[in-house]
Length: 444
Image 1: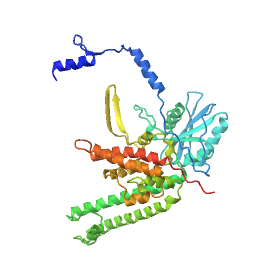
Image 2: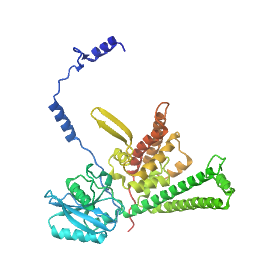
Image 3: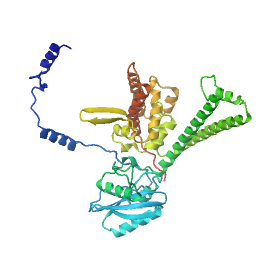
Image 4: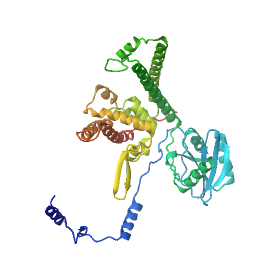
């Protein structure tokens, strides 16, 4: 662009260059540094974030301990560094700045209950609040403490603040850090599912592990045949035609034939196990209290029984997410960001949160490459559902297909990136549908 045109544009916008200085905006009063700091601080203070709320609706008829309200008196924060056979305990009272080390106790639930009783007797006027990091011990210890009336939270290990310069890590120091950070309000508890929901989640996760074993066994057999220059000429692998081709193969030596048959047997066994898991999931879902949510999510394209049950089992009560953006962030489908001053850079998705639920959403998002239509299978899954849910499912088909085609035009995003963006928006439709159903009441 020529210099005369640039000057004309600046004059039209009210920008003037004086003696080579930078252009100034006309009509705006100059703002001092202190005023900018004050405005920034006001904006920061007035901001009202909405954190993820804990589960509100528990199963009717089943007594679930409710976390006590914020205590008015002093609080004794107790950090537990939980291991298989031992637990390191540290105490952080709210009325002082010290952190006291209680010692090492046993790893059984009875040992923790004895500890809670001793601390309650030694500190009669204080409220006890326990915390420990989520790990192999799972939710059982937290449920045990809550059942007996004690306040306990689980903390995500990746979100516990760490000092980069610290090179000494012990059980006692970890317990000290948990107690200190819990007292300072720097720790947030994760969602603790009920025992029935965790049982369903274990079933679905076991099915996924068997699927990975089958996939790995198939890869090993293909690599073994490729080393011996045995190639399948068909189009689709592991189809009935491919299995008939494998049954006719004969290796040059007897020991190689034994290796081949053992590999084929591993694949057959994994396939049979997958069928048994699928049958068990079909039998277990109708008697589950979250069965209405599973049927409602199956109205979406790409959400068959397995994916819908995976989402509900992994995420639990969707009412704890007040906004769909919270669910997207919880699933790790939002882009990462690194902003410094005026430099703002965005990268891939964060992948923070629940990986099985994120995988189910991404696999379902691939179905939205196809134009919107109601197939016979999808129409059968939508039978008996309220019109509000089916309308949301149809709107998801229309919007997400247009979103995919828009992102995959010439010179735009790759198909993998576009599908991830579609999965992020699909999480919003999942949130809208799941919040419209309630769990089944327990039979007395």
